[in-house]
Image (cartoon, rainbow, N blue to C red; front, side, top):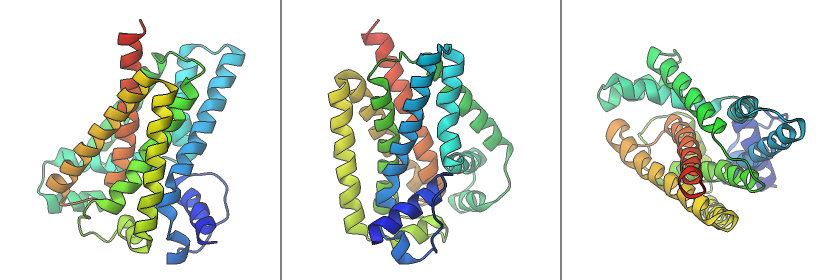
Length: 257
């Protein structure tokens, strides 16, 4: 039952999908981070449905790209983009680590957050217009959404925290760490196998991009903020998906044209 409650809590926290609301108790959040990749799988299903509709109705590249850009935000409610905005504000401040952590907690949106999120969405949209869609594309994109959440969850559980008392601290303290890490490790291996079996070149490029983003997150979080936070996990998720999409399109352009 703990797994089921954690599954529901994960969707309640990390998506806007209608699910039962459970109390924020440790037993309901024990495996929540381990269930996080399932949210990515559902995002992938929505994206697959949009690609199918786009093909069936003959949508142009711009309308198809708009759906690819906005659907993940609609399904998640923008919770990870919120972390991206807060982190962008903090990084742009060039302040000491303590001040950066204060900026992460500030509910106000700064100019650099607005600039960063607009630039992010424009770039994601532009990349999506260049995407060469095939029968394998939904599988690759679905694995991308699962992999980003798998690595985000692992970073929360394994990277040293910055000492704050935010949501990350709550999730981490409530988690059954060894079991959650083991489940996420299985997700990671399944994503690797799925990407490589679906398309060796595209899959390898996407995996490489994700790994590089994890390394960047590790060193950036430690140097700039003194450790991990929930906002940094959201920042990584958005950055990782953008980089994986870019890597996918780059290989399509270089290898298959």
